[in-house]
Length: 103
Image 1 (cartoon, rainbow, N blue to C red):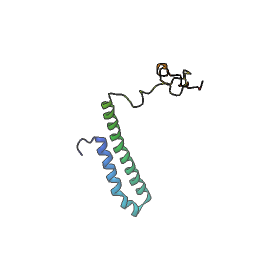
Image 2: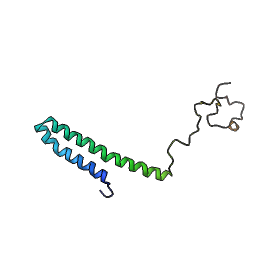
Image 3: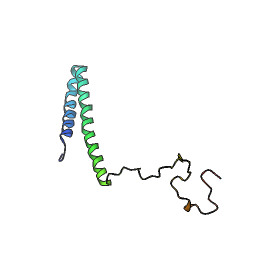
Image 4: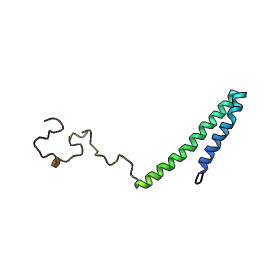
């Protein structure tokens, strides 16, 4: 439990209180059950979103700020009409190679 933030502690407290209220909610009222369930769901959301944000920040720091997928060729679907899809013509020098449009 070392290194937990205030946000994570708050989420954990809401989870525990929501679960502790659940037996009383079953016995007495639907409003208490709704409160218990809401506290549990909000606690889980608060707890895990803090962890996810911290994990993403750590991964970005390890990658040097680069997101995955940004190093792909920009025209792989031939939206510009060049029909190279990131390849250079020097790679396609043999006569057996057919162009992308089938000519």
